[in-house]
Image (cartoon, rainbow, N blue to C red; front, side, top):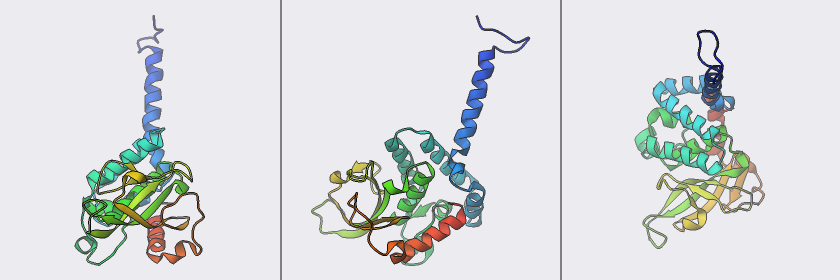
Length: 232
């Protein structure tokens, strides 16, 4: 029989409620441990975005943070962006030929192109605890309609490396399923990069190319703007 306090609920119920409250608080703040949520929300609202969009993104990040298996984190974040963001080219969204949007800019607009999907997933997974060295943004040539298609276009995806020499998993806005690189013969890597450097192709376990991210001015500018938003 459970021990009761005078006129109150069983002690184990009280303890359970306390644990649940602590867990809820931890989940709600887990993403905030890696980013400045006040600044991020302010940035999104300044762009005309709605707080509800920010809360949904924060919830997806908190869910991913609480997951113990890296592949589950990838799946949660990949599905969030693929379902929440509508594909649109930069001329439609930003009125210019090529613009790399920050995650808050993409959320505020609710639309973006392949770079914007990839950038949003990258920063969200970093905030969810995936190490930077395990993630790379990969510029590829995509064969639309299959590997033998003559229709090829520039495209960007996010690659996750469980270990430096492992075959990467590919997160793509074109398909929701996360597949190993060997199951994406329609993608031909050109170069890859993260905040640490730039690599030729997408091969893991190699040192970045000389010159670092300074060689990719658009990425360097994006990192500066993202940090200004609150991705510290």
